[in-house]
Image (cartoon, rainbow over all chains, first blue to last red; front, side):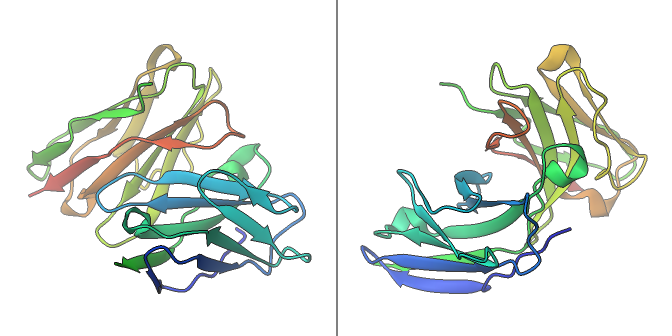
Length: 113
Length: 113
């Protein structure tokens, strides 16, 4: 399985931008980069995903390196509600088990008021 | 609209008993997934259903675990002869189809005493 590497934890101040890094040096050409987050005592929540180009949605932005070996999830203005574990996941073609989400340990983001 | 629901929210059972966990996916979602999350750990994929196709059972940890999805909607995860190591939060997710983002339920916390 393609693997990702994320820092165990990060801290941010409220209302400041947050850049969450993810390394995936063994990514294959058909792997999508997915981000989910899990707030305390809740199920995971989809954040964003992309293949090659940078992506923006109402929750966050995803910046993908040109060689696709790393990516960064950007929260433009952190709020206390953004404190969660953020998972960076590579998802292969949607046939067979490669289409399943394989969750690692993620990055625990703390937001200080 | 209604999200993914799971019942019960908490279940305490004695070692050796059988348990059934229920998942109601979002209406219209053809894909349904079960995961489990042990204390302080990441999510572990268990099983995946897609429409009327044979399920992907590659994540089930032992033959004590089984799951059904009736009528392409509600799913039940059954654990027979529960063991203490089965204690975890069991999460269900659904998606429009395999290629779309997954929406997670709140989970069932299973405690085996």
